[in-house]
Every structure is written in C-alpha cells, then in structure tokens.
Image (cartoon, rainbow, N blue to C red):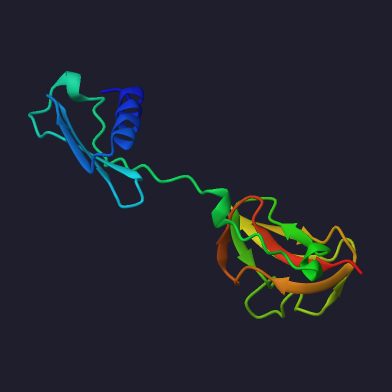
Length: 163
C-alpha cells in the first residue's frame, strides 16, 4: 500500500466520523483510530510472513499522524514591553553552552550589556564549538535556553532590549 493511498484513507475516515477502522491486506495491517478531537491516528503493523524478496520494501514501523498546530494554540498576548525586544536565534543545530569551558564563567547573565560582536554563548555541532555573537547593542533581558540543552535551527536563545 502506497503512502498516497494511506493518506486518502485517513482523510476518508476523518470525514466519515468513524471512531476506528481496521484494514488488513496480504502484507500490511492498518488500524486508524480517531480520538474525541477527531484527529486520526494510524497504526501500521506488518503481517508476519516468511521473508521473501518481494517483502524487502515493506514498511515495518508504526506510522502516526500528528495534528497540525493551529493558529489558535499560539499565545497571542504579546505585551508592549516584549514587542521592542530583539530575539537572538540559533543559526545552527547543536548543543547550547553558556560558558566556554566547565570551569570558566558564563559569557552573559540577565542584565548584562552587550555590544556588537560580544560572544553570547557557544553551540557545539559535530564536535566543533561555534561562538554565537551579538549583532545588536543592548541589555540581556532573558536567557531562553538552559545550559547544555539541545537547540534547533532558528530557535530563540536570548531576548535583548536594544534601548
């Protein structure tokens, strides 16, 4: 069964209002359950058969469909004080560190004034430590990430007040 066929089946079940649908074929068993919020969940299990050459491409992991985040779930109350703050974001994926070494002091604390080029933190990616420098002059208002935490690309790290 192809992914497009599974997606079509999910849409059909979601529209029909059924709470659970099971489909068993020669090499795949699919169960689609909808919860009270009408979000379908797909569980795909292969039927155990002796391995054959034709079964090499069979998907054997459970597949779950996650609901898309709605705009309503994002907090819409942004105070005037936070609207003028500049967010420093991570330029890479890696591990966030507030200090250059475990025995060294942190680069910046809340309340510190930073200038352009000041090192705010380091992010370790593939055993390389990348210094993240400030691109603005201002005061650190909030540190949004804990030390030694993984960070994603474009994840907010610091809030800086440029005034």
